[in-house]
Image 1 (cartoon, rainbow, N blue to C red):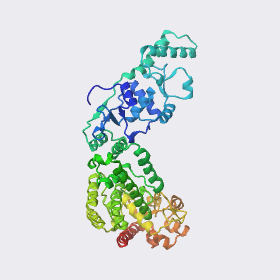
Image 2: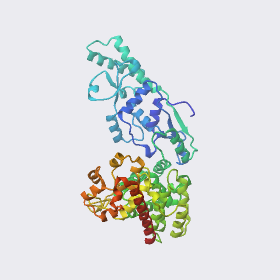
Image 3: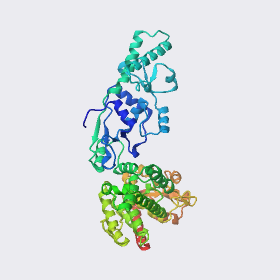
Image 4: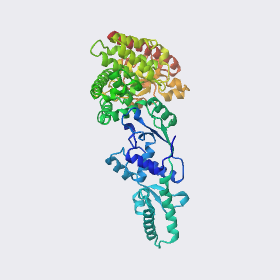
Length: 543
């Protein structure tokens, strides 16, 4: 922190004039009226309202002045201060501002104790009661004589309402109350300025460390803002609409970072943003060419994912694992590209957890392999070799708790979908409705032997939720099963051996008995492992 602390009025002035601005990714005002009320209450009680985190992005944006900053952390507080002062911040358009003004009118009770001024959100009754006054009528006042006139006006209205003359005691009380609100204009606000020389990774890390319980900022979020500043209108008119299109058309809700890393990977062969040269963002022709390729590539792969039953992003364990798939397709789609072989790698990459946690450096390495490979075969072989994981499944891979094992749920769904498993009530293939795939489909995972029965027999939580006891059926089917044993509901639902085989269920009904539950799990785990290996084998043979 350096230099004198700005007062509340200076914070609002900077926000209104635009010397403090918001990155494109942070422009949504989400605080409730109650939160804005609480902010004013904190200021009146002299509570700390937190530190505003500012950053000058001039290192990445030419022409940015040394006194101009982005508000990296604190936009909700700064916008709320503007609301209290009835001053439109630079980053909001007139239409949005008018909606906010209408909803966020904060009032004080001028007859409440000076030590604990009552603060509330405006409502019709308060607006008609002269003892309630809006802070937006107080804080914008600049001169003492104007404030005195306003206070006298309020005193007269309150006295009339009380049926008394405006005496000295009433004037003194209301004067003290209104001036206490007016004086928050001069309260200092704590700020912290990140050095403009810091790299984006440092900016994100600083933000993350001071805001662990708040909004999670990603390196890509700041780059969206950088791109928005360099390519005027692109983020708003093309980037975000494309993300929304992928969500509605394909059921894939992809983070902005995934789209951006695909874009830079296609444009310059780099996915770590600090490695992307500035020229990429400023060369409009090169940028537009990469963007059109990125869109076509992403759509092309999501079409192929749909064919494999991946009907939504919720099914995929790690969305970052899609980026190498996109880049392989973009580079080799007109040559020897094989989606089956890529999907084989995709499954193993998710199984190994290759892109879980901090995966930027791992991703950068894999993208480098793709960029430097002269053929699809060379690229995919190197990527598979880099996984350092066995290609075959064993029974123990299906003896995990399905709630904690995202990949276990993923591979279970894949092999059941591949088997053409149909719901036991609707008789539709899982993921389908009226013989059409359901865009955005989210598998419903339920217990073959119901949980309530297992619990009543003292089976542990982990064994109850063992993935070998899990099937993918609708809520409707699960309700019909309720607390019945499979020996009962299988017949009630009219399920054939073929129906059960599609769900890879042991047909030996004696294994369904609660006394043989462990044997059932071992048998089905072995069958699932065999089926998973067959699935992987088919992918390689088809390719």
